Amino acid sequence: MALDTLGNVKARMGITFSTDDALLDLLRDSADALVAQHCGRDFVAGTYTEYHAGDRATLRLRNYPVASVTSVKVDVIGGFGAETVLSAAAYVVEQERGFIHSRHGPFVAPPSGYEFHPSEPAPRAVQVVYVTAAAVPADVKQAYAELIDHWYRHVKTLLAAQYQNVTQQTFGTTTAIFAKDQIAGLPLPPDVIRLLALYRDLAV
Image (cartoon, rainbow, N blue to C red; front, side):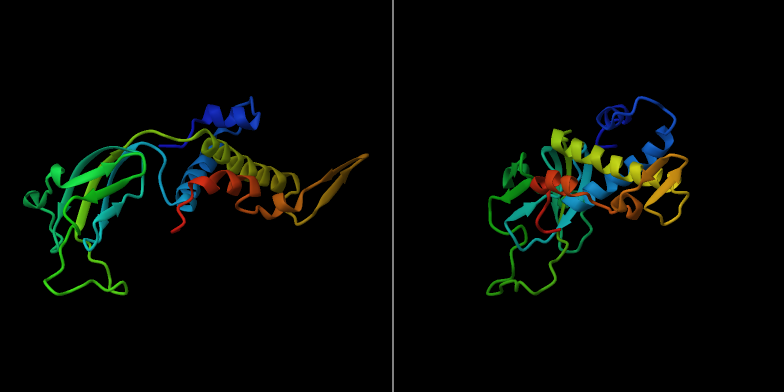
């Protein structure tokens, strides 16, 4: 599911015609993927399955806000059968921030006298299935539209320059000047980075 509709994106871009709808849809697909990768989370509502280490008492879900948690399963073997479901009374969910806190210490208790070392590979011992609510902030939608607009102008610039590495062309008494940034197709304009900064996971 896209971060915003084609109609809303076109309205933000000031486009009133439908000639380039197919191109804009392709650019929307690319922008959806880039925003999710850049921010380290998906903003659209959906059902997600994640795996986490069991050597901690708090799990941080990749996507939020959380509408509901379907199941939390703990299994150091990794089978995650029905018998591994953790009681909902054993943990607390912070829905707005996407955290799950165990009420009884680490989800997988280490053997007696043993402590997990930070350099050790974390076991995939906890499976979380959860559902997120639809919550795409307005400024994320603006960044999304601006990114699509940047790529759209890049395509139009290349077409106008006939895919040649030129910065300007003269047609009779008219001279067209092409911005170097649009010729190069730089991936993230500064305004897009600024708008997404608040929502970017520092771990990405």
